[in-house]
Length: 539
Image (cartoon, rainbow, N blue to C red; front, side, top):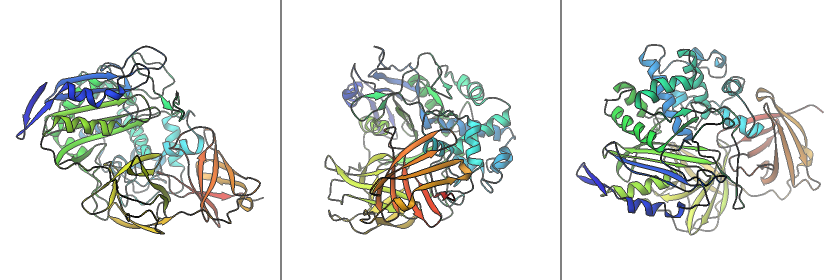
């Protein structure tokens, strides 16, 4: 057991207490997690639980390489900020200054807005995945072209917040063009090597071989696992592989940066890294340049999670307590954010009240947000209220304002849900400071796809859609032929004019969306794509 005193509270790293958190993952037959905890820069807990690969009898360890997913983003943001320090770029430069191909699609959008997810642009990774399916190769330049060719946006820059991997695709290209170097080489020489992170690198694809790497494992929904590479190159949006030991080195440096004493990056750069974006309506998003600076149970935390096909991660540090935590998983279905919070609970005394999952009565129903096309479900699972959105089931907590909210920092939505099993026709929601009226979805008894069958096209994305109705018109298929591949969906009615599209060929909850018909054709809507227009082709 090791401890230190910070702000009058004695922070303790008790190995036995932490072992108990991961006891259920300590197996010899399933993938699991690698975990590291450091106090004042000294690693005190470094362990792996579960297998590095189902194909080999090798357990995870603090020295094995694993994908960190979107935790990569603040590395990419810092790399750009180094170029800003050198006078080669500006934080508020127009995107088109560095990516001229984006002049039409990104008019008025700045580099800062890309990094803080308020650009309003549609996400290239989302478009590639939703329109062509996973496993289809697309270069970073190909992904940029998807965004450059788009003829619409999700919203006007600065007015809303929507997580956007595509912004970091553009950031990656900007760094390469400004520096004259490949992003992986720039990160290696300017960030990793100076800090002794010798096992960390940018891995664009999963189809090559990288020594000392854990495998990723997608859940098949039947108790088994399978491989599912993303296909597209993943750069500054989520392409880094690292180890527990290297990430602990990095967080020691990150905390030094927050104190204005970093080896890499000026004090001003690090202030900007955690400075949250503020929307046009004055709402603070809590998200800076690839980092979030938000409280947990009354203490300051700086963090960013990551998810990949078959894995996930959480990097979180408590700057005022000198506590650094990294959790990396190599199988789908685990919750590194929740596990990291349990570590904080075990290590830091005197924390504020903990928001427990709400266990009261709620309606079981599905609702639609007409503003952005979003759909989510309310239900109870194991006695707790959950919200299902964007392929994720998240616990709901009751906050002091009386609203139910997903217990994840990145979701800024509160729901005014009555304590009743009967679903109201509408729900009041507060999303990024704006009230929305959500509508209960009830299947249309007279729904019929047969008059709607035919060929549609979203010309800007290079996608053709073939809509096929089943014999009774109550269900059907939507076959999308995208720029990089083909994906088939099953269509089921949700409400008049609204149909749920779920992929037929792969069990990926993050793929699919809402099809909304109108007199022009239909729009495709998902968690990160709003109103993608498909027009019906002439017969």
